[in-house]
Length: 327
Image (cartoon, rainbow, N blue to C red):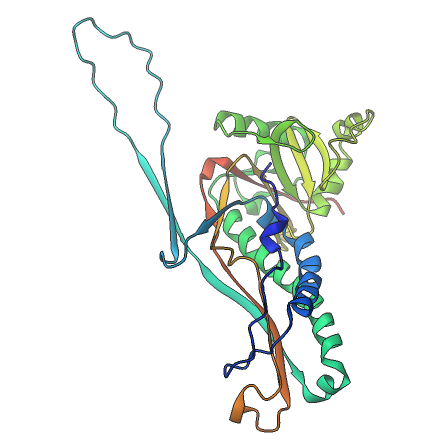
């Protein structure tokens, strides 16, 4: 499994000192407290971000990351004629690119709230923005990943608008078969096993838990497998329940909701940034820092900013599965 590096969100850096640009001067100690509170709320929500392969671009090297990979070669099964040079093969290179972009959010804090206690305000808003940053970053990653062309539908129907069935064990077997036929590399799991990962909504997880195969799986002690959100392992796929799966409220047959699950192998998608810029920065500006735009020192602001991109490395390494859910 791609390990989630908590040090990516370490808080050893000092705050920006008070300058003409208006950044509030926070000590290392206070900055670490506020940022730690933000990261405590941010880290659990980074569910899609967590499974992306991380890549840091060096500074001053542009804002675009490109990856190139060779397409697999056809097997060579014809014997070579003695003394004759056989025809060679053409190499096909696939190039994919993504451009890092900035994202962020902020809130205005009034003088009255400042007088009540700016420190408490920063603390509470830091927690709020931790959740906001985590949810925002994760949805950005999710939507790029989910836009892949490799897709299957419950009960083998041909499109989303025809989808009417919940997930079945036959669907899971087909999912595993597709990944194997596409020669997708499996992921190493913390308990030592190997397999694919499928991220599912709580509603899809509910339907999986009602499958006879799920109940059979739980007849045995699988405590080593059931961690980090894993609810079961079926047909070589670890199913992980997340709370921010994508749902089309009226996308299915007769306008019923369609839930999108996503099955991945190793290195399915990339989350590049510029030297750790995907780590959200908390920015605090004190009242009056805007100069003549705030002549009575009435408004301060607190916000976050991050810069990153998302890139699907190989369409065949990820499989979107669409299904309806039971009531």
